Image 1 (tube, rainbow, N blue to C red):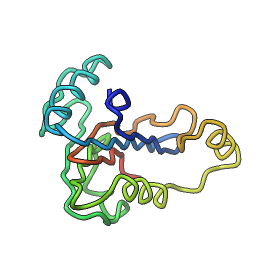
Image 2: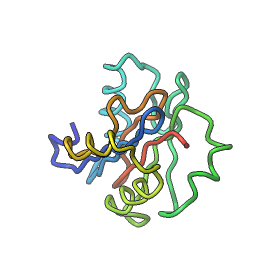
Image 3: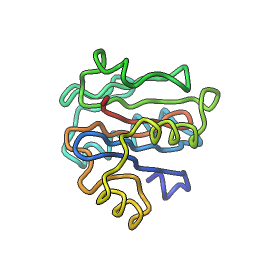
Length: 148
């Protein structure tokens, strides 16, 4: 749905446990998070999504970030769910800044993963996301992630 609307999207990840889906939501963030993203999860067999609460099973929280730069490693002990849907208002960070912070955080790819990345034009390993968070957008961007 995001691509149909002309919004930028990007997937970053590392097998077996990191998956980041970043969506630039240009307008209607609340409606998108509440209805469209909820419908997408329902189609995937997850029917308890609510915005701004997130999911209860599997546990996926929604967090509005007030800072562009924060330590993913330091948050690991406090974010123990399968993932977090992070919402970045445009006043906090740009789509490109969110993507750059994710790339900086990810471990260096193995040679096989680097070849797959070059071939597909994405930054996700084949099958990336086992046990990882997934998610959607925010006022302008999101960084949906499972802590490292």
